[in-house]
Length: 358
Image (cartoon, rainbow, N blue to C red):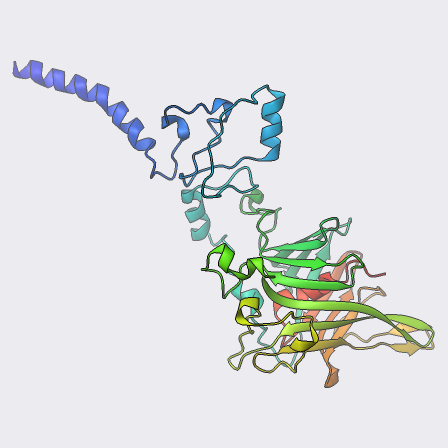
C-alpha cells in the first residue's frame, strides 16, 4: 500500500508539474509573460508578438502590422484595448530583463544632464566634430576622439529636427526609438527662426502630462534667428542666438513656461545672462579680403573650407572673444568648438540651424 501510494503521488506530481510551471511562466507579473494564457481573447497570428497592456513585455501595434493583417484577410482579428495609452509607434520593445541588461552594460542614455550643463572650460574652446550624411538629412555629433554623442535627423516636411542620444547604427538599433527624441528643434517655413526644446522638462518631469509644460511649449533650450547683412561687395549670413542664463552654481536656468518664463525669442527675455535672464550671442562679422575677393573669418586652431555654414559667435559686449565656431573641414565633416556659457546641446542645435543656408 505504501509503495502504491508513493507511485500514485509520483504520477500525480509528474502530471501537475508541467501545469504549475506553465501557470508560473504565464503569470501576469512575469516580465516575459506571453498572452497565450488569457482565455476568451483570440489574437490570431499576433499571439507571438503582442502582449496585453499590463505586461512589461507588451508590444504595440504599428500601421505596417495593420496593413499586413488586411492583406491576409484578418480584418476581424480582435486586438487588445489600451485604456492607459501605453502603446507607442514602435512595433517591438525590449522587455524588462533586456532593459536591465542594457543598464548593466552602460548602454542606457536617458539622462540629458551632461548635455544641458554648460561646458567647464571658460578660456579655451572645447573641440568637437559633426559628421553629415550625403543627403544632408542625418548629423552625428562626435567628441574630439570621435566618440559618439548625439544623433540628429532632419524632417523637412515636418519642419523640425529630432535629436537622439542613441545612434540607430549602434546596438542593432534596439535602443533607438524614432518616436522618442530627447530634444526637438523646429523651424518656420522660411527656415529663418529655429527653436530648440527639451522633450522632458526638468521642472515638469514628474507631473501629469496635462499639468506639464509639454502642452504649453515645453522647456526651451535655445532660439536662433537667421538674417543676412551686406558687407562691402558681399553678403554675410548672420544669426542672433538666445539661450537661458546660468545660475551662480553654473547650472542653466530652467526655461519652463509654467515657471513664468516668457518666450525665449521675445524681447521681454532679453538680458545679459544674469540669474533668471536670457543671454544673447551674435555673429562675429567677417572682413573683406582684397586678395581673395571674398569675406574671410579666421578660425583658431582649425583649417576650414569656404562654406555658407561657417560661423563664429561672440557675446555682444565682447565681440572679439569667440564663444562658438563652426567650420567645414571636409566634404561632410565640420568642426564645432565652443566654451561657456554654451552647453553641448545648445552648440549642436545652433550648428544644425545652418542646414539650409546657401
